[in-house]
Length: 138
Length: 386
View (cartoon, each protein chain N blue to C red):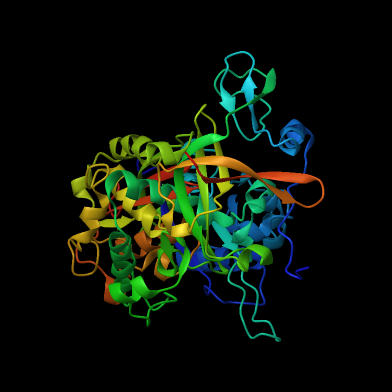
């Protein structure tokens, strides 16, 4: 066993509970406005396009591309500070919503804007599978 | 509205690694300095506007706490405002509007913060503003921390779309550091910076080196705004508030690569009755080098996307053609959010710039920017009223 500090476990808020439940089954979901169909992530109380409250969670493919990327050299959490430098990207999902995520399985400086990526799930504590992205295998 | 009010007092506390004071204490000190500078007293003040820095966080209704700390009675205007770095300019706008409406006559506007902690006795290391490393649950789970990284994502898009280079960002840092040499109050007044040193400085979050980021500072900075008829009787020559505007674009700046300046500049220049080519002194908000670059584009100093090539021509340093952030800005002097650019414009317009004083100093353009290019305020300040 390692004695390194564990990475932070995201809090499972009521609004995000369906997301984490799906992630536990290695399925990626985002919110879809039932009134106008706009996809969004993370969970929000209203649709900023049509202002409707009515919302559902829908599965997405888990494929997308890097919209922007930075390389973190200092981190406010010791587990991440120990790993620096590492990359964090905004991933544009092929269905439309964007998701901020760490990029794994690739040297941080090899990650470029437009690079195809796909989701995988990282165990984070006993309860949580955290979606992260890696370069697409195809 | 143009020239209905003027800035007549400027108060700058010691800045940077200054310990043993609180955000509230710095605010009181800055206001005292600003009133003394104006030749006014607390009895003259009938309005206070506060932009609370991060360490005001537990103090609700901060402007009322400040009123009590200052022992002020019978105010006619008071508010705690937060549009991030656009607040300072917006406070001056609201002060001017309230004065023009006859609601009040003399308003102090203040920013203060105390995010830096003294060096730890154990390690000898000073804290470097951990308050700015905040993160929410999802972002923290992915190792994404702080404002630096949020701006870096947008800068990376600008580099991708327009070919902006690292050295072009570096040129902004180098130019402002050169200006800081003329400003004894700048924390980096004695620290020369070359482009080579910029390139070899440590990364904070790529594409930002250390010298792409502002100097998180303890301190306070206040200005006194008063009505035109009183302004002429104050100790210092008035700095007239000639034009004002705001712009808050919404949405994701990584898509547009544009700040609120494109919205704010129109009303401000129209009210002032001037155009960009009339401007002598440029005080542009500079939380990062990248913010300066995008702001130059958005005010129209160059086309959108050409900001990198524009600054690469070395037009913005003391030897260039543009008097831009002549005190070193937040990159090389001190980070008092939107108050830093306002203070330098006031100093230049008054002719108090010492070694960095620019010869022609009739008209200044000041920008404030908050959030992640989310909010924007524009001021046009002048030596002459209209």
